Length: 113
Picture 1: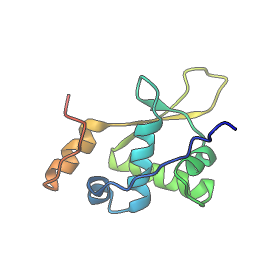
Picture 2: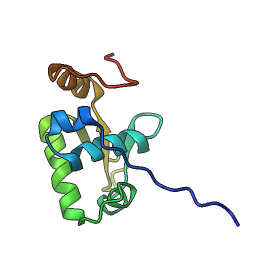
Picture 3: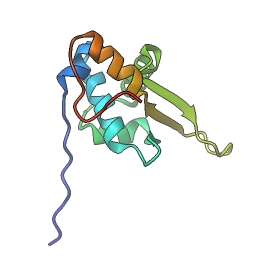
């Protein structure tokens, strides 16, 4: 029998400090974890909720992503293929790191470009 790959979700203190919301902190971490080589991910809200192990609605995920976009932590765009209306997300690590540093904390494994 083939072993199933289990999902993991982390709540990082530095992300909670800047978002003031554990769910948004999870979303930042998962968007980073699930990003492709260019740093973008295009999971649907339903897929993202499953990856985050959150039993919440698509609307709740979208609301929290919209808040992250408003705060400047996440960049949102449509796919480059005009016939595909899928949204893509990218965590702006420069903004995240600066916000974390302003709280007197650091982000492990990342540094400003």
